[in-house]
Image 1 (cartoon, one colour):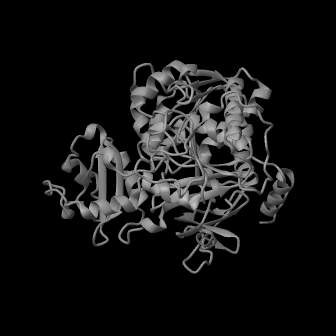
Image 2: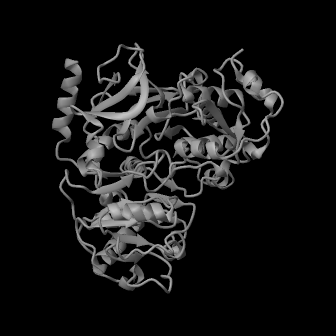
Image 3: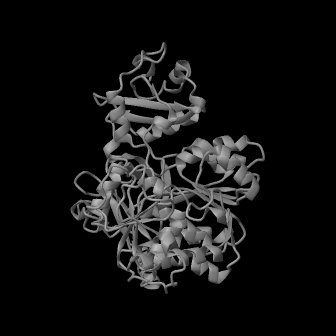
Length: 549
């Protein structure tokens, strides 16, 4: 304990006053080497004529141009600017431009419904709205905005005829460039939202100092592949992790590939052409990318490091990713974290260790950055190996939930943050994640562990989620590759040693409710299961055949 406290004190002294400023990401990289290449998979919506290939210096110049236009339109330091627009990398450029002039970007996922966005805009207390013509005339159509936003700015396209007072950034071309504005390290500088797996997303308020503390351990991990490998990112542009990923590799001078479309049919040729040495995407996207292991052109053969940070990974997927690489000693690096804290624990796998991967083991709490404890319902520490509530103490925690400060404070206990997950720490200090507190089912030791096991036993599964049925019984919901019917006999053999479950329910993959990071919205899925009449039970998949006999 004394050694841990010493490490914390040293890091606090070394990093005090530092800040993570997304408005400076590309400019700092350009000062290092303005010719570092960045390849996109889709033209920028705001500048489609500029193609797919850029340098860091060119993107820094575009950010300066956008920042000048935002200032000319009237945006000022500390103003909140809600970004809700068509999915494209220009979301990141607009966010960086907003931050460049000291305003606070609030990033709202393109996957959110317009009604949810309207509620979040109200919580943001009349922000600027930065959007595009397609979104304004689509998801936001029929939703009056004048009472919830200050003004609406268009980054691309034209406003619908019924829109009043909408401004276009195109009208401010040639605006005078501005010097950057750096907010105080403790001042709100970025707003993102939680995954929304349990309802309306929470708005998480970040500041530069907490972002810096999140970045330090991640840059250490990226150090061995600095400058040498092309880094490919395919993840949502509205999550703080994307900007941390940019900082990791822009700061080290790595060439980068930025992809919007995760479809394997699109990603395969992109990776075959660009040959990345590092890739990172959402865990559920990695499941889809399993088919790239045998795709023409061997698109994963060049990968030296696979990164995953949003959630625990299925062991089957880790094994297939590593097996697809032709590098001598590829690694799969996994971080466990959440929007409110950032990365909390991590570990890596090699080809030799991947077959022993435990999907519930998410690694060691990051030494010097994260203190973790497991407590019972009364808040008392439990013994090693016993499952309880996970709580952490760190310098990486967000400032608050915007408009829900009481909700934020309710998760704090003497400086310890209640993560919302259940788990235990083994005798080696490794953290094992069991379930979300709100998703626990009495008859299951761990829904997530059962899902990992079934993904490994049934290679045709593209997704499996176990939710509580109308009477609290576990109901497995499955989706298969190619939407082929799941064979009841194979299901029966795969589940013979698991606790009793209701008959599985098969849904088309695209009908499963998801968040911006492609996590399943389990409460919403449970509602759908309760309200959708079950199909006739196929022979061999009734409850008795699944009851661990």
